[in-house]
Length: 150
Image (cartoon, rainbow, N blue to C red; front, top):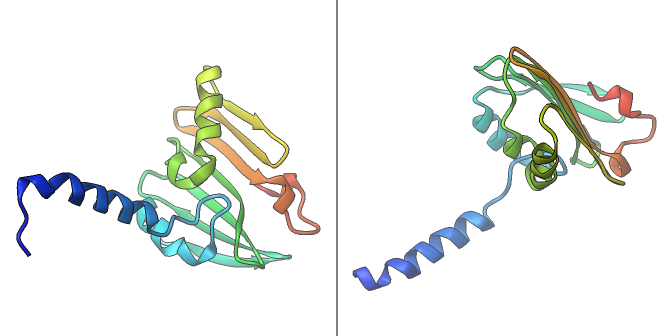
């Protein structure tokens, strides 16, 4: 197959569509089946520990950020939590909920708080001491309280 300069826009569009159709990371609301892709994004492997009604996946990335993902028995990430000396990659961690984080961040100077019927994001701290969590309130397994997400 021969390509010419005139085919460049078509190839660019095809590549963009291919990337958009690829599976997402196991971000908030995502599937456990893509956790391996996400750990590559964070640069560290996850360890896992079953708990009452969910599995907790944890990692500490090379920057020292500890990330915890709470996965339901159905295989969905219903909550994430983090702490560390720098902020985590929120786009990777929050996935499709990243836009809500960005909007809240623009409205406030320090710390972020999003309180929606299904989505809660709380992020605060200062250099070398950031902490936060995000969860989907309607997807918390039975017996799991928001205070359990740490």
